[in-house]
Image (cartoon, rainbow, N blue to C red; front, side, top):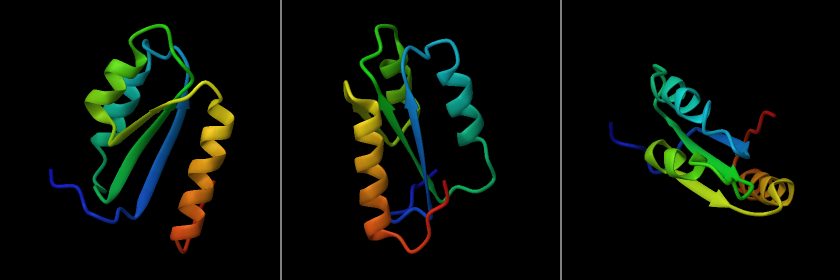
Length: 87
């Protein structure tokens, strides 16, 4: 699948130690009929394999101690560039 340069939808997923669930979550997203999206993972320094698994599926993985701050910054960036934003 070829990813569009300007995806219509950004799926931003904050996580911490989600090794047990992250792969099935990301596979489900990837299997959607709509493909005009990007997946961004914001990880809070997981101590398991969350980041490793996320890197296999996500378009971008951000590892940051302060997940809330990183999430707010990502949302701010998206709001400045995009016409629509749904939370």
